[in-house]
Length: 255
Image (cartoon, rainbow, N blue to C red; front, side):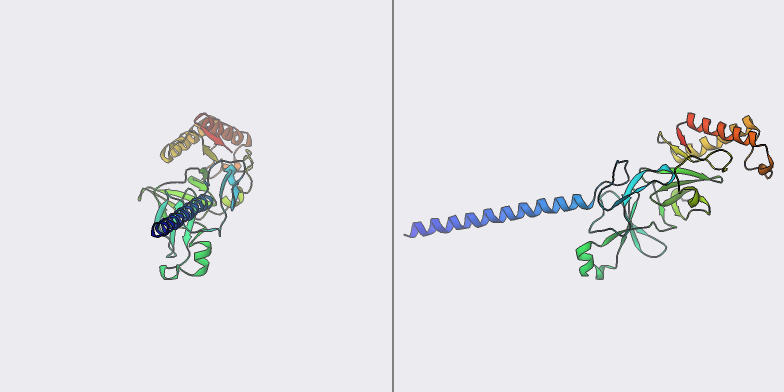
């Protein structure tokens, strides 16, 4: 009788232990699936976006990014943490997506943050510096300044700090980016050049400068001259054709 009771107790203990193992395994799988669902890869070319993502087609950029306001408990790994904007908020930068911490640590257990997540996708804070650009970006020249564009955000190179700064777009640039259609000669004094061979920023600036100088010498038209508006339209068209050909030969998609 005693032995039967011991065996029965052992059997019950084994079943309880096995049940706990099953519960732990199910929880682990659920957590992994949740983590993957929260952090799909954004900022990469795709035929369609994932959940909570939208297509950024400005300047022909054509990449998918998270919707502003989408909240997660933890942003994707591998980003830049502890970035503080001029507004005093704490940000996390991953790919071309920016995440803002919703509140201070003493507020982190508020039920809304516990349920939806403490990090929310937001606009990039103008003025903040980052050491690198997003993996995918489009270089846009405006005047004589190259802007690096991705996900409704513009970056400029700051040589003094050896970093990129988030800036507001100059007047007129936003309107030019409402359509990905190529710029036709005679309609604008801007050409948009998107590097296709991974050219670094210093090479991009050098290529643009050299192509501009060559185009001016070939066409006789200088878009920076005070009398540019009064110069011949034929020379102007020849300048844009020469510049587009030069940049195309150096590995840029010109618009």
